[in-house]
Amino acid sequence: MKAIITAAGLGTRFAPVTRVVPKEMLPIGSRPALELLVEEARSAGVDGITIVISPEKELIRAYFADEKDIGFVYQNEQLGLGHAVLQAHIDDDVLVMLGDAIVTGCSAAAEMADVRRRTGAAAVVGLERVPRERVSRYGIARCGAIDERARTVEILDLVEKPPVEEAPSDLAVAGRYILPKGIFDLLAVQKPGRKGEIQLTDSIASMAREGGVLGYVYPGRRLDIGNPDGYYEALTAMRSGR
Ligand code: G1P
Image (cartoon, rainbow, N blue to C red):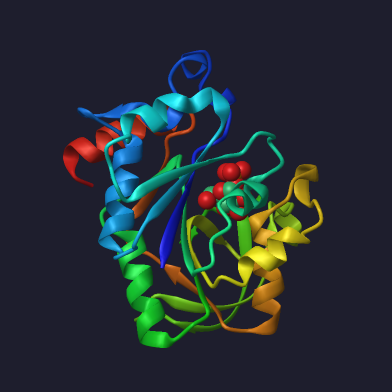
């Protein structure tokens, strides 16, 4: 399995500093946030990491220049998360990590890799419970069988950013995915969805409707460092180890 970390987003929620510093390079202590993701990917046992960047974010490439297991591809147009992942097209299963989501309290990626090994699921999607009023910010799962002890749920379908009244549950896609290589064929023909963008959620939903997609409610906390509030929260959480 290889890892893809998406870090091509413009960072408009964190302007103006993102005009010169990519949000993924903002420091958590003395290290850029992105380094925490790289470590998490390695802890899941991946054999290679591709970081998706945009031409404005060469700083990321410069920082990781000496790391032999890291390569780069470019997303030149902002056509959505699914499109970003497609730029890294790899002939292997992939761990996809969203570059502006750091997780404290556990290695979500390593635990998801374990879940996949144990269950033989085709795909494992990291999930978190969110308050009902916030479901419209996330990909939301329609769930079948739940195993509380194992923290897993069968995902029957997914919907990207549904209005509250249409949300099938309060379980949200939380920045980490383990996907079979077949995902790239689906992404290549994926029609634009929510916001006119090529949504990763929609391609995983096609898989889920065929079966074999498991959700894992990882025990850590996801912190969105793509905006100042989330970033401050991440600093506080990392400092206190929570
Ligand atoms: C993306 C995904 C969404 C997911 C969210 C948090 O949305 O499209 O399904 O729930 O990340 O992981 P974004 O926050 O990039 O709009």
